[in-house]
Image (cartoon, rainbow, N blue to C red):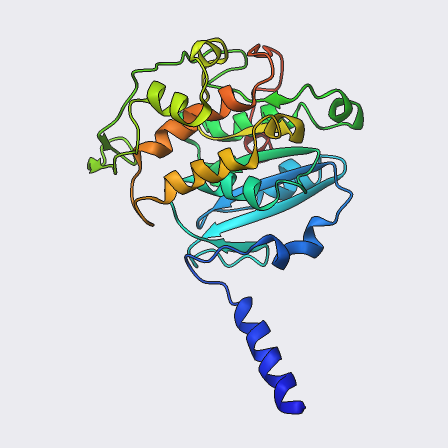
Length: 280
């Protein structure tokens, strides 16, 4: 009997050893999903400084919880849920939606972890601050319309949809070496949209797109689409394997706003400053 108990304990221990390429499934997180928090912050991290989570979100947003998905083993943070490295943040967002489709928070804020980057005048920090400024009181959360993002470099800026968009090579940063990206199952962007969403491209023309993957959405907006759609998009980002540049990643970045935006109208009001800078 003791032998059986020790074996079971060993198996249970192995199930929770974090390693690259392993994504915890919802049954492993069941206890974590049973919360009364209204707003959940979903962060995709690699090895960035996560100090912004407390200062910008936890200590500011009423009724909150945070989930941190980490690619690789570089980041030693107790909050890390180790996941596979398929492209950029888009697979992580899709995976979170798929695995928690029926248990999503009322409002989810999705963000990358490089918020403390000073590039483009602290652009990513300003984008996250803009989104959180829509949710920093209980009244704002109750009246939150469904979707919020600072699409480009200032509130209300419109980034047009280009159905012909495609990309063959990609640079990680200015001056970096170009890297060939794995081709998607369908191209260009307009055909990719129609293949997965089965809709006319007049709607994305109305909503435009967003860059940088920082946005907030109500679960009702996510539930406009069946779970199978998110599963199909997740599978598309897994086609080429891990640690590979993906054309589909660039497509997916451009799909979030058309998929989740309620009316395509961008609010021109909202904070456009980085509180991390003011605290320094």
